[in-house]
Image 1: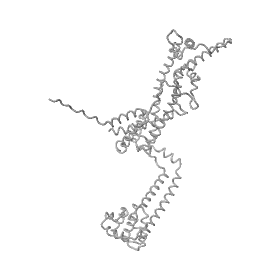
Image 2: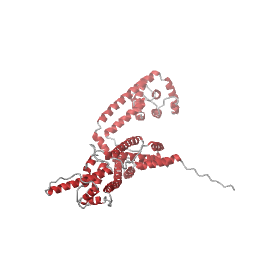
Image 3: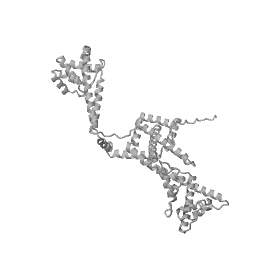
Image 4: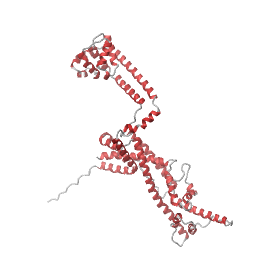
Length: 500
C-alpha cells in the first residue's frame, strides 16, 4: 500500500510541476504579464475614485514607477512600499501645484508659483483636506496621525502609515493572486490532461497491477526526496525592486527547468498516457507492408539447417523427378509458412508433376508450421517422419544447401525490396489533411461508449484538481511518506516484569 501511495505521489508531483511551469511561463510571457497586470489593476482599483481623478493611473505615471519598467514589460512586477509612498506623495504635490497654477490663471493673476513649498506633514494635510470628498480622500484621511509636538515626527508617522497600508494591501493581493493562479492551474491542468490523455483512473490501475512500473516509480520517489530542486514561491519581504527582479527571474528559470525535466520523465515513464491515434488508409497500408517486411527479415534469419530440413522433408514425401522436386520446394519456400495449405500443396504438386501419399498431407503441413533446425529437435516430429528426416539430412549435400540458400534469400530480398518501395509510395500519399482528420477522430476512436467517456472525464478532472493543488503540497507529502518508508514499522516496546 505504501509503494502505491509513493508511486502516485511521484506522478502528482511531476504533473503539478509541469502544469505550474506552463502557467508560470505563459503568465510571464510578454503578451500576458499576469503578475504585472494584476498589481497594476489592484492598485488602480484601490486608489481610483469614480467621482474624481484616476489616482491609481497617476501613481503609475510617476517617474519613480516608470523607471522600473523595461522594454519587455509594460508595468513593474513589484513595487516596494517606500517607492509607493514616494510616488503617492509626489502625485499629491503635483496635484497641488497644478491646482494652484490653474487657480492663478483663472483669476487672471500671473504670479510665480513656488515648487519648493513645505514638504512637511502640515503641507500634505492641507492638500488632503483640499481634495474633493470621495473614496481616495477618505483613504488618505486614515493615514493622518494624531497631533504631535514635532512636524518631522508627524511626517515620519504619516509616511509609515502609508507604507504599512501598502504592505497590508500587498498581503491581500498575494492571497487574491494565488486564488487566480489556482484557477489557472485547474484549467490548464484539465486542458493538458485532455490533450495528452492523462487519466488518473488509468494511472491508478497501472500502478496497482504493474509491479515493475510501481518499483520504478518508488525508486524515482526516493531520488526526488533527496535531490529535487524545489521552491514554490518568491521570498522577498521588504526587498528592493532590483532584488525582487533577480529572485523572480531565478524563480521563472527554475520553473522552466523543472518543466523540462518533468516532461522528459513523463515521456519515458511507461505510464498509460497519450492517445492512440487512428491510422488513415495509407498509414494502415504502410503499417501492413512494414510488418510484412519485418516478417521476411525474420525468415531470412532462419538457420540454414531449418531451410535444409524443410527441403529434405519435401524431398522425402514427394515422388517424381529430382529437378521438379527442387523447383516445387523453392515455390513452397517463397510462401509464408502459415500460408501453406492443402490446396496450395495440391496446386504446386500438379504444376510440377509430383505425387505424394494422401496420408502424408498432415505431416507435410506440420513440417512447414514447426520449423526444425537440428536433428535433435526433429525427435518432436511424428514417428512416421523421424527416420526419413534423419536419413535425408545425412544425404543432403553441401552443394544442395548452398544453392537452396541462394535461391531462397534472393527471392526474399526481392520481396523485401518491393515492399519497401511500395511503402515509400504510400508514405508520400499521407497528406496533412489525412493526419488532421485522424487527430479529430481521436476521441471517437479511443472512447467507444458512455463508460469510457465517464472514466475519461472523471480521471482528467481529478488530474486537474491535482495540478491546481500545486507542487508544494505533493512534495511535502512525498517527503513524509519517504521518511515513513525508510523508518519502517515502529517496534513494540519490550515488556518489563517486576521481580516478585
